[in-house]
Image (cartoon, rainbow, N blue to C red; front, side, top):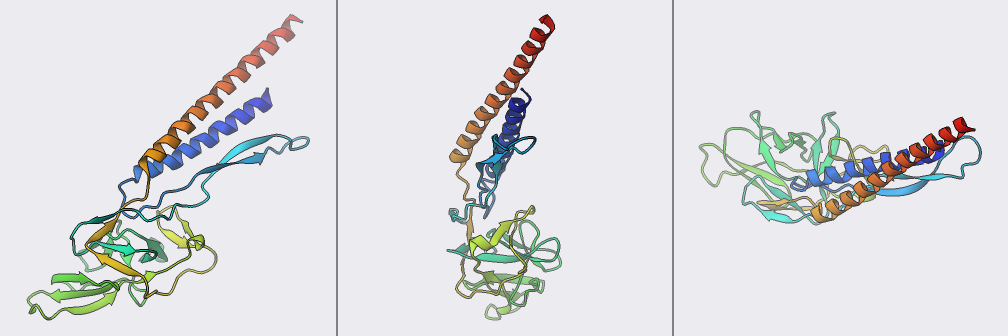
Length: 249
């Protein structure tokens, strides 16, 4: 009975983890540039006394769905979307280089260019991009060039202040950290800028989460969780019945 109870408990625990992964995807169905987490289950041997002849299902997050999300036309000067493959380079909370597809940009009170999550955009020298305030206009070119028109200057006085660092990285060399940013695996901490990566101005890339698929997966996992709970109750009832028989004997 203990073995049956352990396997059912382990299965219920893994089902809960799987539901968390899909629930997180659903929660980010409207998050700009979000990449859905994948979830799968694989058999894992249960080690203990004797031979490892029993197995249980272990849920895991093997990676992410890197398919491009739908592109939305916003017409906003500080909205950009990566065309095709590529990433925007930003600085994470630890001051390290990280990557995102979220192109909803803004300028803070000190003139630093950042995304909607407050992460600083990196420029061509791997340093945060500073915008000299006040300005009347800002333009971001297809190649990531950031140009501004100082306040009070004539319309033809646009000046280039920096260039957003755009990189191309093999998806297999990336992992999603707990802050939602993608980072390089291994010892490498940064990538060189890639001139082949381009931006679309006034556009935003949405999440690539398929809400219907995620909801269906959650329903399947919920049903499987209920089945595991019923198995635990059955094991408990069988244990009580065995105890009763032993008392009778």
